[in-house]
Image (cartoon, rainbow, N blue to C red):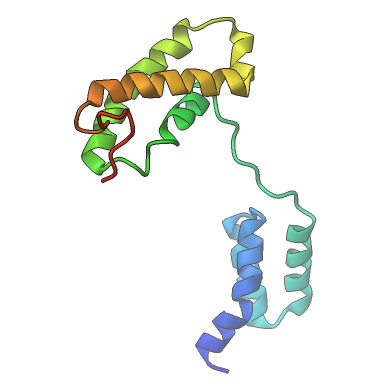
Length: 142
């Protein structure tokens, strides 16, 4: 068996362990066990990963959700320079809005964040005119 065959033979299992969020130490222990032929330990480590809950991404703050909602509609429509200018305008607006907005419970509402993001997006895009927004109010494609 060549080295490439050995690597290909464990690639899916290593990928499964990594996706399960196991530590580097567990990954190394699995690789070492397979290299030594210790199938019992390797199977035990795979079983450990199978019973582990999938890793979750950290929850986004209200400010992060607002920024994502304001970026999502335009990020693929702007060239690099326009996107940089847009973000440079948008970030202070979102900072101000998150500090001075309304009742803190409003941030729990996805509809509130989406509506505020749309307004901030349009305000930032207006500052970029006429380079980015055409006379019809639509984004110009790069």
